[in-house]
Image (cartoon, rainbow, N blue to C red; front, side):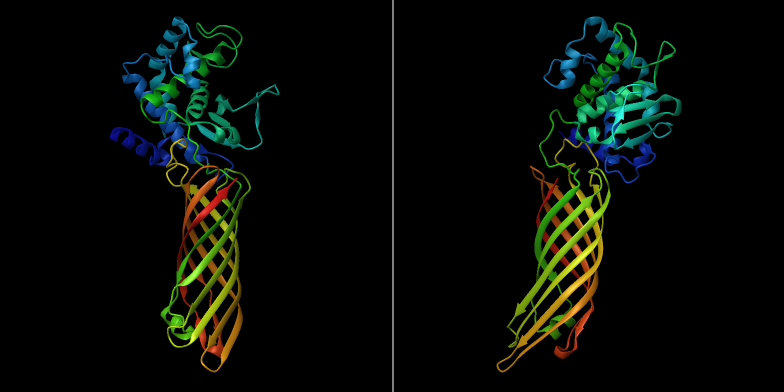
Length: 389
């Protein structure tokens, strides 16, 4: 168990430069980290294949990849195993940072060259580039991602001095699509080796996905006011905060998006002998940036955990009231301020997340008639839930 945890962590925290993952176009894609993890799992599978005592390209379980391998005849299993052993070093060269392989996310679908057939990825061997349909890749299991990327890396290898395409026979893999069938088998074999190396889980999870276009949520908590404000407002208790949030991303895999926060802050106190209370209703539009916390195998519970940073400018109406035994004093002010928020989103199921939020707010205002002034940066800690879809 400990070795499995260490291996998963090593893949999660592997530096971005460790694998052949230079991206062109479509910057700021949330799937970048997932692809890094996939490449790390393929590297672990490659190492496992070289030292494994188990039969390569053979599996008798119930997974999709096992079903594909179990249909192979003896000659096909032997050919696949021999190919892995003889090409493991070449695959390593493609995987790691000195490789010239680049990747590009495609948002509008991919079609096979000269055909209307939709595909998950296309390899352009002439410039060592792999195009990936980001929507399909996003919705795949970790095993399916390994199978796909290994298939595409196969096009960058050679067999008997020739390029490996999708058309024509390849060894005992006969028929018009023999080479394509072999690369699918190769990808399945690497997915199984990744499972044997415990670099990915055996089963997909049902945790909420971090890939959504719209997230709405509500959090509640308290805000700490400055000593000067507490003294002038006669409220010596923490402020109650309700934060209703909405965030929108152009694509489910985008890192940058638009955000809106409606915040209601209120407080009251009578312990000083003066009944005091206030209410702030504020609106902050802004920008939000999000990323996976660990960028690992998205079938694992930890990997859908992500964080977001939101910055906004806005403001609203501030109202204060003071009352003693004889009089009531009221005052209001339109205030303009800035808001900064760091939030952690921990997955539940059915698109729900538990949220923990830490925020800073600068909302300076002064109500002269009551002698109340707020000019400090205040911080709040909130907890709640959100729903992403």
